[in-house]
Amino acid sequence: MAVPVRLWLRAFRRTARSRCKVDCFGRLVGRVQVSGADASLEQLRAGMAWFYRRYEGELPPALRSAYAAAESEARASRVGLWRDAEPVAAVGLAPPLSATPRVRPTPPGGESLSSRRIGITRPLLGLPMDNPFLERAVSGVRALAPYVPGKPVSELQRELGISDIIKLASNENPLGPGPRAREAATRACGDLGRYPDSNGHVLKAALSRRLCIAEECITLGNGSNDVLDFIIRTFAGPGDEVVYSQYAFAVYALSTQAQGATACVAPAQNYGHDLIAMRALVQPHTRLVFIANPNNPTGTLVDAAALEAFIADLPPQVICVLDEAYTEYLRDPSFPDTLRWLARFPNLILVRTFSKIHGLAALRVGYAASSPLIAQLLNRVRQPFNVNTPALVIAAAAVDDDAHVAASALCNVRGLTELRAGVSALGLDYIPTWGNFLTIDLGREAQPVNRALLERGVIIRPLLNYGLPNHVRVTAGLQPENARFLGTLAAVLGQAEVAVANTVRAAG
Ligand SMILES: Cc1ncc(COP(=O)(O)O)c(C=O)c1O
Image (spheres, rainbow, N blue to C red):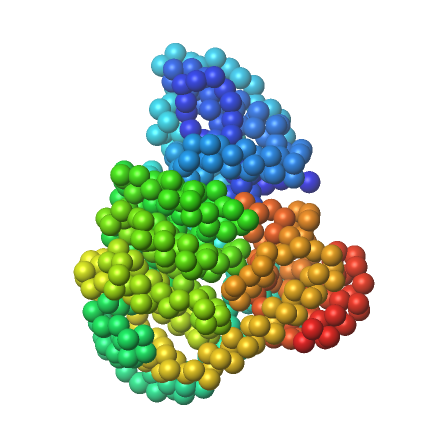
């Protein structure tokens, strides 16, 4: 079967060689380097042909080794994966090569291409012309692979024509919103003809009361994704460095790259943050350090005392962003209230969301809690009306719905217990989690398993784009959803479904 290969090309001056990686769609992405002072079109074609020959027939091992090589390279050079990748031409999904193009000498004064022109002005190997605006995009965006969201149920329905689908792919709350939020939703759409309150007073007041921090410390966002993005846009630009961990939430890498800043990625330790390695990456050009706690997609938690010491040890001009999207799932009372740290650390930003335990992912509301001085700057950069009126009203009603938060946390504990029991019954490993999801090591390539699950109406998240080709992340669902996922997984893996279903029932 032909393997879809996406090539990003760049003309280089040195001897022909090639590197490849896996993009967020699980496709092989390569950079072909060709020899010669000024690469010709034919040389690039030959390079592409070589690339196809090299990788087409042996994708799985190539995927693995290519990714491993990219990772170790990044680790060795203490920089983010492919921070220097600056694709000049993204030539689209390639059909299989029918014939290898012949290499002809460069016509004098003819086909000699500067790297800027390649693939943008002409199609290569009969592939479709790519986006002519690519060259106009800022360099970080040219190299950007978009965020991969969980597949929506409606999309799978359209694709496969099946119904009865469950989605455990995006760490949403299976209970959805609580009664207070539902009630607020019915009155929230009353005034859709007016712009929202740009300052989000209703929601800020509710958060301020609840969290015991001044409204001036709060910056609202269209989901915490928005907040993370405008934090990076506020503080990091070309030449600045942003530190985060391997396997950390994907948005740090995306926004850093889009902004043209340099990602410094610390190797993970047991899939979690290695604070010593992260501290070592903090250098004079470091502007931001991101820590997701608990982390997505691995579910790991940084020890509170170590975290506090880490922040205390940072140079005061380096801003530490604690991404606490899942913090309300931490029911351990010994875990400190990080909001109290804000008074001690003026360089700390906490980022939280209504998408998880409040069950309001579709509304898109998140916020940053920080010193007022930082909030002032963030407010300069965020879009003026970034949180819409229904979102402000409904989220404000959800802030104090303690009963729903408690019910959601309990539902999560039950769901995770079921998932762990079922996964163990299948003889699979998982990463201990503090979130609302479980990351499972399938012990084999996850993509075919994921495909088979999708065909059976089960949507989970494979993690190839995080460099975890054998892992999948499954959100803790309701009991029937967990049982359906585990039973289907057992069937796909060729194991006894009944035994697994019994284990889940017993765990529940
Ligand atoms: C660690 C982490 N941070 C932030 C987000 C963004 O969430 P939202 O934009 O829905 O608030 C997510 C979403 O999954 C996440 O896992």
